[in-house]
Image (cartoon, rainbow over all chains, first blue to last red; front, side, top):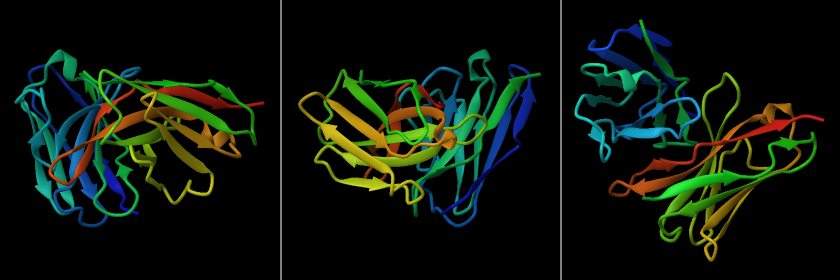
Length: 107
Length: 120
């Protein structure tokens, strides 16, 4: 199965700062990668699909890039509601897999 | 707006069968793919399997021998059964819907999750 490795595990930033999260796949997933935001006790929220397409209703401060094995999610200016755990997800090949998550926390 | 709600026992004894139901509200279960996923404490999300509204299924090979997902379109519900559970099956279980992004499918609507603990 394809392993997704996210880095860093934790990102400590202040509101207004830029966040860059990384997701690396153990083999190519083409552009078939999604990003989710997850807050405790809530349903995960789809942010980005096909590596760079924003899902419906997602603010423009969220952007995704990459293809093949290296992907990134960028939050251009953190809002208070953006502090959460972010997961990448692939279903290009084999069983669907998720990264272990990046926790974006308040510095 | 489509919403999903997981329901079922929060405590299951070892060796017994875990059963959960996902109820779809605000929309129809027809013509979509639906998934079950779980997240054990301190671990990453794990895909369990999916079902199409017609009843076709696909399971994670790591769980395939123990998993059954079924659908009841008349009730807009689908269900998960996981047999012979152990403590390793303790997790938050989520149901979720796939949307079609031009032939590729991604999880766009999720339930909040149901905590299931396996313990005697």
